[in-house]
Length: 385
Image 1 (cartoon, rainbow, N blue to C red):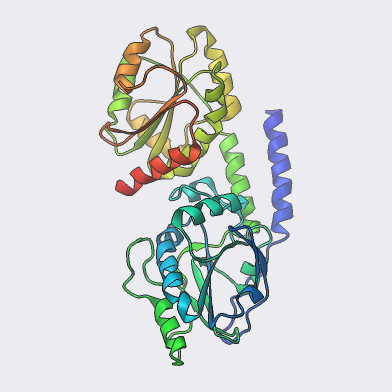
Image 2 (cartoon, rainbow, N blue to C red):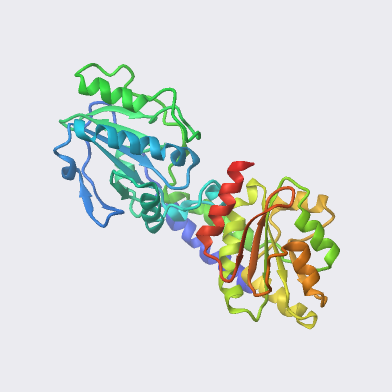
């Protein structure tokens, strides 16, 4: 209890310091000059406004890795960058979110968070032909431009006066083609020397995660740390029901032991995945294979790692007649357990499976997990549901 109080007190002091730095954000007005910036790109280069001085038009898209609207727009933005490069149009993507201001569940639509290293992975995977710049540390560019959402697009003419800001298109969360290509149409008008019909539109998308929003994440962390942690014995019959998964949920089942180094090492990544996707019907079920005599040791480990039953999972768990997501298999029929969960499991720990509604295993891995691969499997299944 003392440890928790000290943790909560320390974290609330951080909240107070963050709140004091809350900026006043106002979006640039049409006709305003583009403010200067100096930002690091995922390609290792540093970019300033002058880096693009040869461009006839400069298109700045404030975006992010995690937002479903931003994710869906990635390739549409990349396509415009490809198609208009030879026409003198420079597209630049900027991520202005503070990664520490994100709640875990806000990452529930994405494999990656908004950190700089994650941006590098996204840029590589998506084969971006445009620069992808990081503004999440100081948020200086996002603040001075007044980027309200992701994505939020700003178009500047050759004199670097703002001629448009707002949505990129009307695609929202659909990764396919948009029916109203707002930015592309605006670029065409500008290149033709024609007046911009609609210089301001609403940038629908996830709100910018300003650093002052860290207090929300901090509050959520304090609440998570206060949740009770429990573990129940597991029998073969219950294991069989869990594997059958006659629910609408996606189940991640992990077999582990306190004496298994890779099991202990990957546990924080499992919890992180659970917290990301808990609100989207994903549950983490852990099964300890420690000897029965070590039941206190198992519970102590789970408490140390802080793996409670999420409040967003509780209702469905109770409806199944269960009370926890943590189990301890204290019997000796390990073959029987393996047969009802995953017949392809050869025995080594840790072992993890992702089970879709209806009981189909859509991902399995023996050994320490790559957290990105686990999240990729979960997101892929969520997009199928």
